[in-house]
Image (cartoon, rainbow, N blue to C red; front, side, top):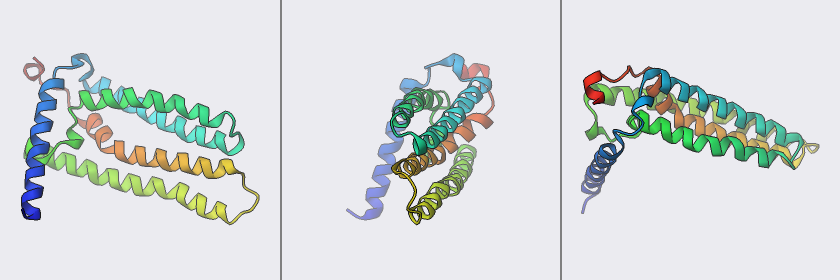
Length: 178
């Protein structure tokens, strides 16, 4: 089997799985599929990311409470992210064959922005760690905080495409919501 056949088979499998999951979850949370509700979820995710960054700052000075505080935004992130993915129909993760041309273009543009966001945000804690490693007076908490900031940066970048699409998509057509 050639690599091309393997890739094509995998894309077909992804499309079938995506469409099966969309058929199962497509009717979930109909009241949350409006633009205003999706935007509220995007803002909630942004607030959780800000909390994760703040917890990293707490870890620099206090390694006793900081790691415990990290669990709060992470545990709130998981259901918020899941709900956003459900109400936005996971378009940012959809395989090409499951979308029309306009949706593919939207998805690809959002993914491109997400990559730029990931690179731009993740480089900040990386530089902080490199510079901080040359200073002998830094605490263990600084390295831990840089790790948390890096994880947060990767989450921000990974979630950006779905957040962008959820923010920009119009409300569903009334007949499509039925």
